[in-house]
Image (cartoon, rainbow, N blue to C red; front, side, top):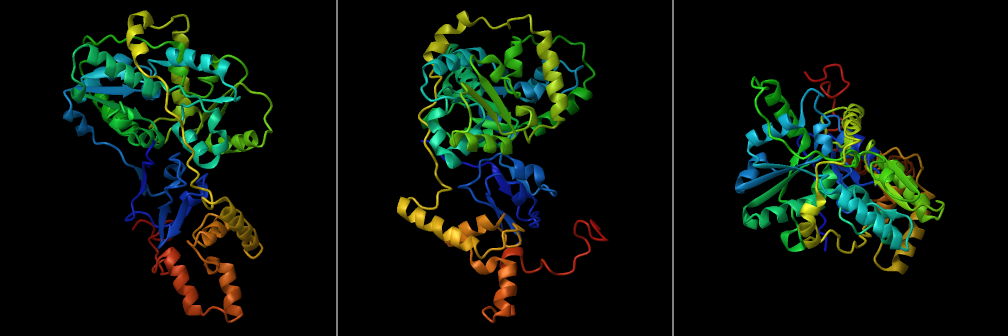
Length: 455
């Protein structure tokens, strides 16, 4: 059973309830209460749109400290290709990986190492799967989206693990075969996004977790790039690592999977595009497609919220690197690893729906609440101003039937109630203060945009 874990948090001391995060959230998971953003865990899919939109960095990801790696004797950095794609072209992979070892890692391993194996398993599954299109498991944010908002599409999700999970399982087994005790092996994934943190932290050892921690990619990039720029010994001998194939390097980018799968394959990126496409798929408006590659971020993992570099420059560097290796099959001899691959379970367990956006577990009660929402919408103005602290009138109506808000939260209805003597002015002010905080309407010339901003 998958635990519900979320990596996105709000620093209440910094947040001032500006609503930027609320306005961009694709699942209406943010509310404003007492002048601060509140993330509803049952709706959040950890896509990171709120983090990108926050103007004061009040939203952050919960991550592991780099010092945590020293709890293990064998410390492995599991590095995705987009990490190296952020560095200038004059910085080699070998130099990057060498510097990582100076930080304390004893081994560096590529997260896309198992792409060729995964690709083959996915092709085989697509042949026998009755539900078309088969949906990739690569993006954990999309998986969570389907679980909470499109549970009817769960049977379309492939059961093959994403490369990062398969590669971690493979490397752990390889070290065990070399005689390293499992308790001494610590695998840390260098993550480009919050969703992968949530996915990894959501598994326990009892449930087959093979990754011990996550390192913020932006943090590690800044730390390494500073060391590389100050490195005076650039001509020293560097470790030689097996090169990934051209396909593996581009796997995490948009069309990285679709271009390598058989049949009619489509690739959709950016979370709002994904939602629109899944709505059409759920309504049987999509003609026959065999395979769907869905990515929450624009440009795939190159658009991850924890990347330092420009996503288009990162894609360009990765494609250039892949082009140079197009005629090369990669340095991996799979026959050498056949025993380890066969010994590992490369398939995910059954994915359960998380119908947390449903109005009620009881179907009849849910229908009644739906009818009440439609009735409430007759009274709400329908302009989605967000002044009530909910992202729109529909969301406020849902909050009201869930007994988390009242009709008087709508500032326009407040005025009408005051006019009709059904609400006192003092009560209306108290409602506004509960949403926006008691000092929100006080004069403040230091806030963003005011004449003394930042002074």
